[in-house]
Length: 141
Image (cartoon, rainbow, N blue to C red; front, side):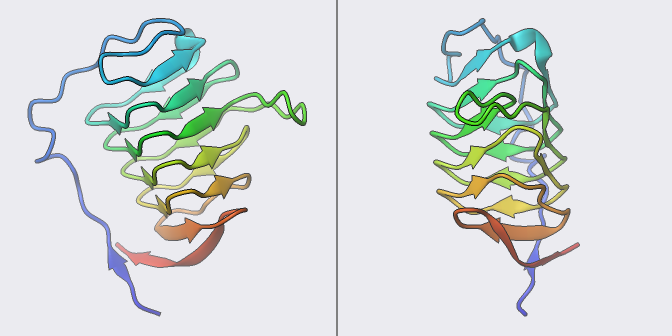
């Protein structure tokens, strides 16, 4: 299988500052967080416009994580009653329009393809995509 090399976004965000996050209202970047006291946001993160984060049961977004536009991160689901923290490990990337369900961890340096539905953990250094998301291949470290 072909391997994709992981890269750091630190240069891209050399002037990054922590965003002001209002409760249940859009940030200046047009993403929204409910239960912001339960959100832990790392440095050098990039969250796309119109992304929704429900942190009722905890959401951890580690350093250098990128989340595309129109994504949804749920630590609670009213559809099936599932609850649990969401963790996006260092330097992972979530493609636009993807959904991350309660209790899921996306591993370090992993990439989730656009329009994916992630209802199970994604290991570190992997490319995963689909509905539901599945590991496609490893990413070179």
